[in-house]
Image (cartoon, rainbow, N blue to C red; front, side, top):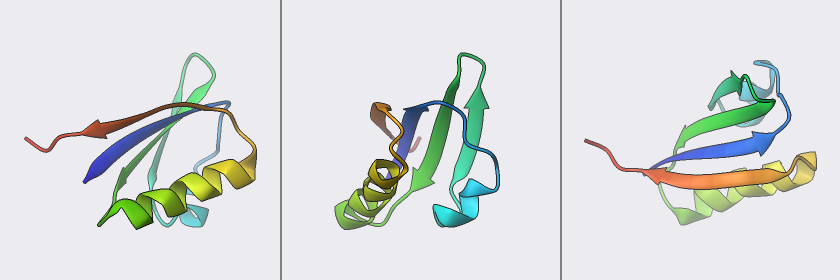
Length: 67
C-alpha cells in the first residue's frame, strides 16, 4: 500500500532516514509531503506515531492506488 502524508511546515531531506527512508517533498505552500509504501496498517501507524512525535500538524493522509 502506498500513501501520501501532508504536514504543515517543512522538513529537510535529512529527516528521511528518521522516517525509515521515506521520500520527502517540500511543497511551495509551506508543507511537506511524505511518500511511503507500507506492508500493512501497523507500519502506517508507526509512521503516523513519528509524525505525532514531531508535533507537526497533519494536513492529510491519502492512499494512492497502484496503477
